[in-house]
Length: 324
Image (cartoon, rainbow, N blue to C red; front, side, top):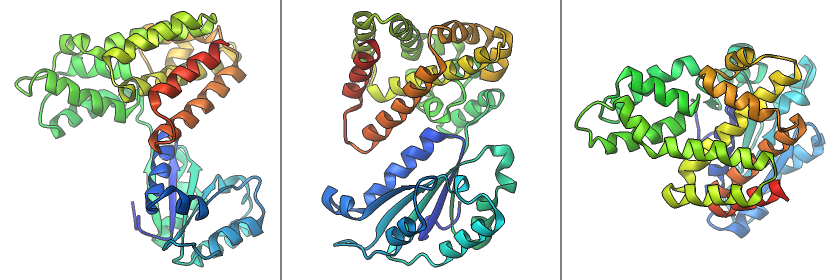
């Protein structure tokens, strides 16, 4: 990461939710909602004009020190060397009265050769990376994270937790903290501690809730959601909802390609038992429906992080929407 106070910052990687959350944090640049609205521009590179970008960046801020300009997916527009050169020259001239936040989807294996990542690094501008952990990496990451939080976790327990959470380091860090508190930092976390933690109940509840959504049983889905929220904070349950639908989306893509459960397990990077459950659930949803749900989850996540809508209410509204 370099120069996070720069006028130009690139948020890149394959963890779309983390990028969205970080993007929402830049709203703290303003002291109130009215000044934020007057000084914020959101642009999609695919559909904007050059004048749109130029005007958004070079307009003077109104009752604020800086304007905030968010630009998504520049690679979709600047696809040849000449266009990219002009865009980079434009970035060099962004005035201090603007902060241009660029978001770009980049797979980890491609980042070292990605044209914009390479240019931002060379220019010494702001650069923040958000990459999902892979499933095989998670147990080791969990063991290391437990030590950083002042405790220990046994390898079998780390593997069990990784299997339940998937490649989500934010959720894993939260659960490690809860588990360390559960054992009072007095001994290493064991597999039975992970099994006893509420996440197991919540995970089963989410699976059952998605089952109810798949068959249009709104009453059952709402009941399951209410029970989970009675025992868990919404922000603890929410990452598992996201994870479940992400697994279903990946599993559905395997099904579309006539893949097997074993192939789904490889793609999902989870235990075969978990992959089998996701594979069977995904058969009940079409790919377009799962894609719409996943984009809706992104909208809810952003609304919750920016305070526009309480998360628990958004979750209830989502269940109602999916069963009506």
